[in-house]
Length: 142
Image (cartoon, rainbow, N blue to C red; front, side):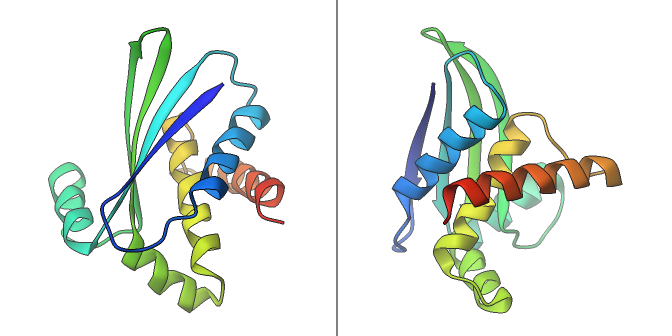
């Protein structure tokens, strides 16, 4: 079981059910056996830039940031927080020629995989992470 909290701090519409389905599909695909919880926070350019500068020493807007936690609360493993910049997602969706909902879903899946320990620093890791992202996306967004 995995619980997702969604905190929308923007005026944009957030595809909650689609995100929840992606989280469930990720948990199934990765065979998570314990109870997990995570939070996805939708923010604007200023907030994501502040977070990026503070935690990654990068003074620019980014699309998604993930912060792991791992604390155990009432029998649940709290994985951490994912911050998604809705405005950046909108811009990227337009550039890619896809819907904003799909881009938000892609970013949420990417963030979830980071919370679960996946990374894309090395080529092999990036390939594995992209394959998982595609698998979860395909299962969720048909």
